[in-house]
Image (cartoon, rainbow, N blue to C red):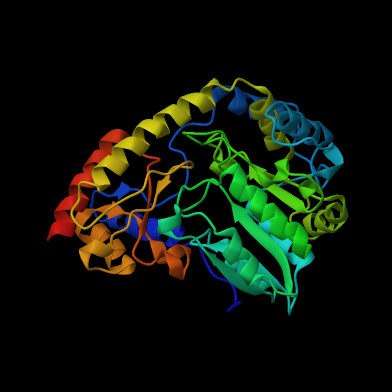
Length: 380
């Protein structure tokens, strides 16, 4: 258990909730979930499933209708041409990370992961006995990996490369040329890739590009995605992976041994999301775009702070080193004195020092209030 880490967003959320219970007004910019409701047609599909009695066990990798809907959606959106037998549905997207690393890695293996990055990558790798190897994402490079640096980190023990773009916590996205260079490294060293694309739909200035678009990558890449971010369904716990054929059976066995299956009626809601209107998603992304511009502009007006414009997701990763405080100190003082809940950049790895992660999945009004409080506290 000492190998297993945690996710600081939930720890800060608990502290902020306790402060609220004591009468404090807290602005939540720490948790990574859309502040929109799940679309009505998706909720109705779940209710109809319940009314039909869809409350029993279903096949471990997902009901056939949903696995078919996933492949049709990936084809329609131009992301991937695949077959339903390579899709595995899970309760949330995190199991896809867990099952992929558990199926592939053991003592002596190495996993390269982005730093800053989602903290579960390092945690799960360590838990499985493998060695996590951080791939630095530097502000000077737009929080994107350097393919040459990636190549220098690969050893004969490297088994898996984790990519996560659009990126949490930095909001960065990769260009096609960068992905082509990374794909070349993967092929030369015979690696498997876990491509975490849960934020694929939330992009602003250019369309999403995936490493799966390059020749030969579908046979060595696990696509991780789900419904939480795109359709504001975090509490539904719905995710899926598209696996190379050699991983489908081992991962299905892990599903059977851990969660048995994903709830039947929620899978009906997942189909409705994939096959239903896209307008609710577009509306949400347009609003995120307005908030993105507001929060970046406001942060860049605070002395000692500067912030690059993110390419996707709903996070900013401002540099606060000019304030003279560490990331942890800044996280604490903003919550305790300003009533603003954010996350230290070091919650996402040691290369996050000097930064904060703030989610703009909150109203423009609350974002403006948070910016005002931050300026007051950080100038003190």
